Length: 208
Image (cartoon, rainbow, N blue to C red; front, side):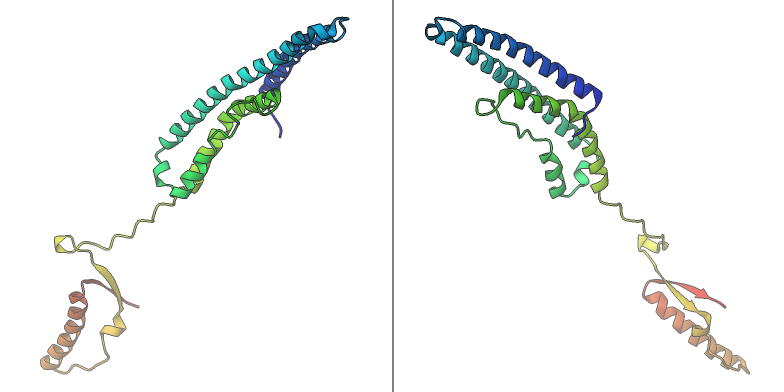
């Protein structure tokens, strides 16, 4: 994993502080071990070791509490996003899971210094993770349905479907010789159009 300059500096300072304290503890331990009355000073040695471990464990516990609170605030910020409620339940659960603290509650059963370093890295990279999750919300947001073209309104607000009819399908080839034949031809055309109107369809007659 590559870290930015600020993260590397933070880690360097943390390691330096730990090393400084470890140096002091090591010097105290070496003094006890090199003492001619070594056996009498064993309680001092145990105190040095116990003190170093307890300091690391306390620092870890303090930093973890701050980190856990930061995760909760981050999740609340994502849940306030207008697109959050548009996501599927499983998508929300998956994104929220990335803002849960999976670090041990205490460092008593592990290496306090290593756990502390890991924790400080996660704290420093949290803002970047939040931005990634915001992008993830936008990516997983369901697409909005495309608006249907306006087909016009009938009386009472009822929508008309549109029926496209070729002119050749309405008008049959015929010869009209008198008014009776004209009336008959117009009646036939009217019936075809009336049947379409009865089915609540708007008629679009397409010519050549």
